[in-house]
Structures are given as C-alpha cells and as structure tokens.
Image (cartoon, rainbow, N blue to C red; front, side):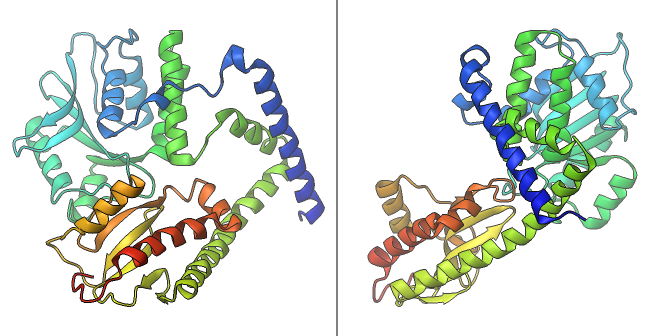
Length: 388
C-alpha cells in the first residue's frame, strides 16, 4: 500500500530530476539546442503531414533509404498482403482523385493497382467526414484493385469515423476483412515516426524525423519537452513502487479534472451573477436575447466558446456584425455551424495540455471567459434585435 509520504518523496524526487535536466540544458543548450525544432517556423496542416508521410513511404524519394521505411510501415501495421520485390513498380501519391471526384490523402500502389494501401489522414479531431466519404473510398479501391487493398483511417485518438461517412454495419464488415484499419497518432503513428528515425542512417534525415516526432507529440500528447518526459519515464521505471505511484497519480488525474470542470462551471455562474445574466450550466443569456446563448462547450477533447443557437439552423446564417467586431478588435476569427452561430477554440487538446486546468485554479480561465461575455453584452445585447 502506497502511503502519503512515499507519494510526496516521489514528487520531490521528480522535481529535483527535472530541475537537474533544466540545469544541464542551460549549460549545454548552445551545443545541443534540445528545444530547437524546425517545424516551429510554420503552421502544420493535413496536406503537409500527408506529404511527409508519402515522402518517407516512397522508396524512390530523396531520403535515399530505399524501401526501408515502407517495409517497416507494412510490418508494423500488419499489412503483409502488400508484397513487392525489386522488379515491382511502387507508386506513392498524395491527393489521388477517384472516379467520383474525391481525393484520397495518400495512396500507395504496386504495378498500376495490383495492390493498394490508402491513407485517409485527419490531423484534427474537429475535421468532419463528408457524406459517404469512406464508403466511396472503399468501393473505389475494391474496383480498382480487384479487392486487393486496405484503407487506413489515421486520426487523433478522440476522433471517430462518422456514420454518415460509413455505416456501422459496413465498417464492421470491412474491418473483419482487413480492408479497413483505424490508426491513431497517439498510439501508433508517433511511435512509427520514432521508429523511422531510429532506422535512419543519415543525420539530416534523422534530425528531420525527430523534429516531426516532437511536433506530433506536442500536438497530441501535450509534450513540450521530450527530454523532461524521458526523465520522468526513467524515474517511473526505476522500481515497482514508482510504477505503482505513477498509476495512482494517473488514476487520480481524471478525478482532478472532473473537480476542476465543476470549478469552471462555478466560475461561469459567478460571471452570470457579476454581469446580471441568466445562467444554465455553461450557457449565459443576455437579457434581450431569445434565439441564442453565449456558451462554452466541451467537445472532442477541446473547449469551445461562442454563440450557440437554441435550435439548429442548416442555413447556417453568420453573425457578421459580431464576427467583424472581434476580428477588428481582437484579431479573432470565428467558425460557424448549424448549432453554432459563431465558435472558436477556448482551449485546445485539454486532455493532454495542462494549461486549461492551471488557468482554472489561477482564475485566468474565468478572467478570459468574462472578457468575452462582457464584450458581447456591452456591444450586442440590444433591444428589438430579433436575430439574437
């Protein structure tokens, strides 16, 4: 049984080791630059990630490692149906057009579609599937390859393929036939990129892959400093007691998040009292509004904020006046949907990023939320404004 003193000693030791790592970085940072990442100089998107994946899976590309990455990829993800030798011609393409005008993010095929592997790449949880998108891909690949294919759906762990993209019945059939596989960045692809770096001989290519891995870890796992993360991992593996403590802390983290969510809801209620607004959970109603509410909402591992409609509207009318106000005054651009008149991320990736939870405890999250709510109320809580 782990006692309180053992937990405190463990946390103290972890803090000491992290501080030591920071000191080493301070003294040797100029020589090794452990936090430098070339990917920090541009915004990464789905097309760019697909291009990087296709580059390394193509045996003829300028990485000069031949088919080493492709063979590792096939073995790692149990794609042994795709067999090739030196006499076969491997083609790897991005944005491949299907007969229905759709575009497959990455496709790998042998000898003009004797066999094929396709990748549908979703790097964001919030990216929606199009209607019948996965069904159409599967039908196209089945026809093109005479049923000798596999489609990989690569996405963040929190994202699931929608029923409008492929029915639950179809999905189960294709999974059982090994024609459809689901991969996540957190559980599979980040590790695969790390494997790619480990089997790379060229220093420049290895450095690129390591930077790519660090970028993905930051995006999906909240790891800002891989060196610090490894220090903690090493500490956890030192003995059985440390491992038990780590699971105790991990299991307690979900309860902590639940309590902090309750605290944030109380803070929204406080905002309502301070600004004299009606509050329902995380929704606030300005006195003259009938059709919409100011809202905060947890969705797909993120916290959204904006103006939500009481009833959905498929025509998706935009609140141009409000959008222009925030873009001009605060350089914030909003999205819209049938449920949301305007929405944007309040905090992203809250399950893996500590900032939201810290900001609840410091009051910063409440402060930011109140600023948004007050701006809306001061400028758009107008009488006889039927749109609101």
